[in-house]
Image (cartoon, rainbow, N blue to C red):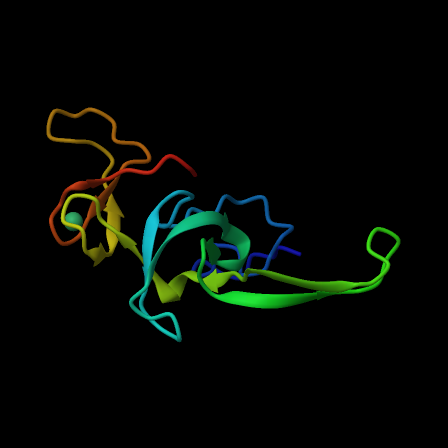
Length: 135
Ligand SMILES: [Zn+2]
């Protein structure tokens, strides 16, 4: 359930799937990200999908786990799947296309001419635009 407890808690809590508030992550689908913590530290990969309410992302070919499947009618033997597990967004950083380095991103409302820059992200290091197809 989503509850409002005070002006410092405007955003829904992580894991709140019932909230109708949109959560916007700095990381988007199809971004190139670098892992900055953990076993895969320093590796790069493409974001397959994001899980906004959990603040997690799934990165291609990284953070593999064996998912064990119960026996079911579909696969009577059960089995195990080798697949990517979600990572918390705090462990990844978007790689900027302009300077090629992992960096924080920020958003502006308008450019110098006053045109809207809705959805456009910029690199904190080189100020270049960071594009991305997904949400
Ligand atoms: Zn950059």
